[in-house]
Image (tube, rainbow, N blue to C red; front, side):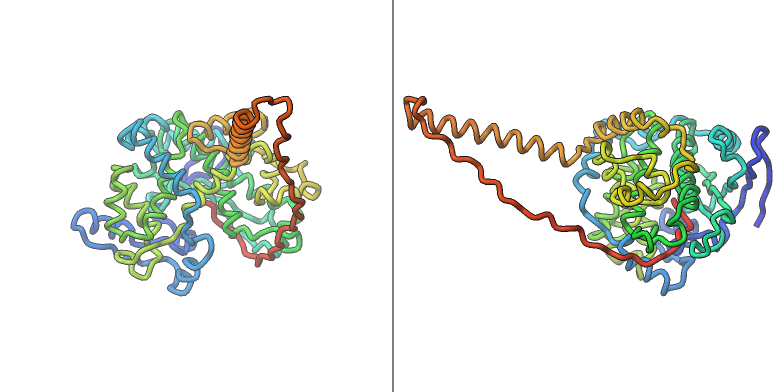
Length: 430
């Protein structure tokens, strides 16, 4: 492994470039031979045979979790966004250029990231590691004692960034979007979580595991909406594509899915990466249907957040790795005096305004607003029908009988089920 070191002129953050990502820093479902298999598939049409970092037992265990299960709840919304983008931009290259700007090199991107860390007062608290061997655009990682030992001050943080042309965020505006995702969301929530009383005993406070589907969805959903804050075009195209591709994998093989997605993404390298991440954990990735639905968390979480903007205390959400429905439980427990926040969320009202605009652009409407509209229109229609009914049947409306009153049934509100989650440990956020 070759590595080079350098330090930014105004930053004390360590920056390194690695030819390969160490095995210990790879996720369980990350193939160790992706480039070889990609060339075989793209050049010669050979179906891929992946060798994964984790053992067969660990891989199968990861594929059986709720996080990996493919979901269809937001399929209509995802496809609608893809169609809107296709009709407006036609080519995904045009969208990426419009949203994230022209490409930049690693040196310029490092300067942007280092300056971000300095401006947010976290310079020197993490390492910046560049590698072309990364299976994603960026990843935030920490290593240290397990959470049960309650020593958060011993954690070491690393920001992994991909330095090849496959990283669509390695652009003038895109790198700012990526750092808002990785540092402005994942790092700050990781750091703040270590200051909280529940850090070493989430079960004792009735909080979900950080690896539960609900926790992963909110974590990645928050990072997803933050990614688009500085983008010039705010369509949730990437997360919608990941969600849609996972759904379609249930009825398509590797090759079929790869060719099907060409409708929405022409770049063969990006398309390969999407299909690989979904299919690589299957016993026979080339032929088996289905795959891993973990990447659906980006879109599902973003939709959840955009639909509940007015009820979320974002400062409290940043106090640690907690879910939206857990905020009332931790409201009186969270230590707020030591919480670090990214600049874009300091003014919550301004932040909500930007997210409302993002929700409107992507046609993501709160279900409560839909219910209100339906109730109002239904009431008007019933009133109109009733008026016509009595107008025609009783000429003299002065003596018309009263319309029947709606009977309201008293329904008891049942308490939500209390679910206990096993304690696990979160090391990586993508």
